Length: 366
Ligand code: TRP
Image 1 (cartoon, rainbow, N blue to C red):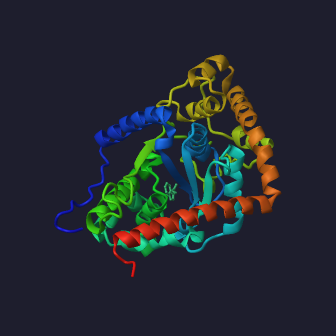
Image 2 (cartoon, rainbow, N blue to C red):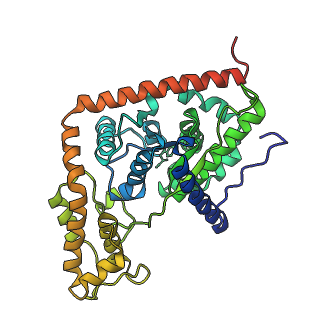
Image 3 (cartoon, rainbow, N blue to C red):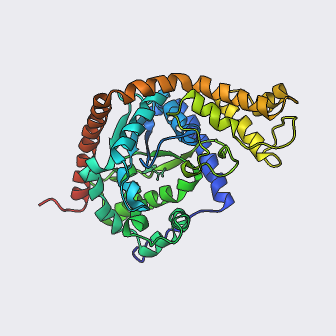
């Protein structure tokens, strides 16, 4: 940061969250008016299998945005796997599984671009100029990185952990995405990406005077309630309290049978007083499109057993076609690899073009 630039103060107040939500509502209207004004970039770390939290939290929304006509880029963030762990894990299986989840959920490779970090050299090279416009103190203050580091139970901060928000800015900016559908936890990263775009413009200049090399991306917050695991705790693979998209109908039923509820036979939707019961109602609601209160009313005093079977049926009905598609896809590895290869080709073309503009702006073409 130079003396004429302001330090990035992450906006974590309730007021700034309310502003982000209001802005997202305006963007939703603008998408309906003209989806061609927007380009979306989203992504996932291939660290495990996608579960219902991912599906209702982001994946379903991405498919809807794609279907509303917004150009969508989906990143398999393989370099982000090693921010907070010692190895890559069974990465190949996870990457292929993630692509199968995307396609089964409705991401259409004809319209959307699926690609992965480690295949796009020019994206990764953007890290260098981008690192030059951020300060170490900003990186250390990033609230998401701070809480993620705390969650690792005393791990040392690695250089990649500290700087991954800059890498994530490269994910967004290399393809000139102006919209990033995210959850609240990712808002600091979007702010960081905006600041990088702005500072790059100020310091290194433009290729054409009318427009900066990079757009200033915005977050698109979706209205999704925080889902709990089936034990009422935070949803997490290691707790075994999640329903993964790839699971069978029987496995789903088994997990829900063990779900935590409470002693009151009359089922009511009351997230404050009855978080576990309300969470199950919310799952049934998201799967069926019915209001959680209406589902509660139809169960009435029939108790938790009936609630569980209602949730199981709603989820299995919704997931059945997706699971069938996923099983076909997983059996056809060559097709999954073809989809990724085609996406990477397109992403590389875009990344090379952007890096060339960066070199021009930085006067590094000799
Ligand atoms: N950090 C994101 C997550 O954990 C994944 C991700 C990587 C991402 N690069 C991105 C999300 C760029 C949005 C934009 O979910």
